[in-house]
Image (cartoon, rainbow over all chains, first blue to last red; front, side, top):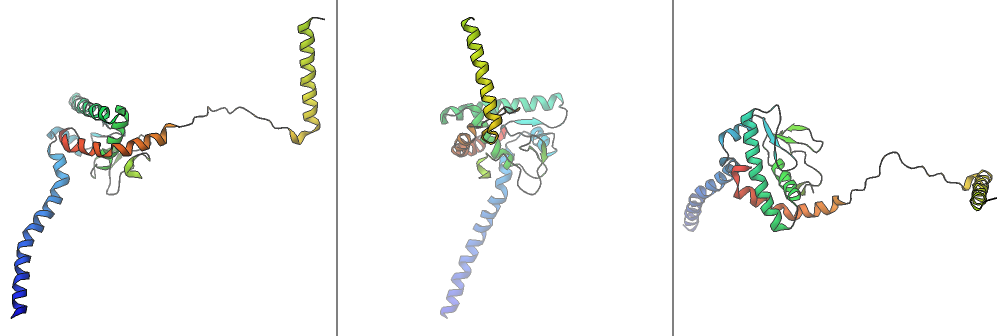
Length: 142
Length: 70
């Protein structure tokens, strides 16, 4: 009898916990996509097809020969990136370049397979399933 | 004999004496040649890395606050 009650309680806990776990798992799956959610569709497409990539200096670069639209898109994003770097560099008491470089380390590490990034030797690389090749000075590289 | 001429004679004598000393005690002579490539000492590497570690949190925050530009 006691064991039956025990079982009932366990089952109830399991029933309650299951949806919570599912929601938790879903949050994990959705989280990486959330970063891409705020992107302009043209920007998202250019990243996905490798037209543009993340440079080591914290800015976007154009991989092939640039079209006028792509150049405008990249310039606009880089200007806005620089403004954010300038704000944060000032509050941290470092140069814009230092902050931008740190940001570049993170942005390269966060590229997803298929996206382009600049390797420490300056060449464009396509992110594979393994980790990206980042500058040895990058914090994530230890 | 002028003073400068006497000096240059003296200098030449010193060079000859030095050269002789070198050739006599060959093993004691060290030739130092200037390198053809400029010597570059990267002093800012370690300092920079220290700075970068300090900036990671702010950089993460930047991505979270401005997802549309990253």
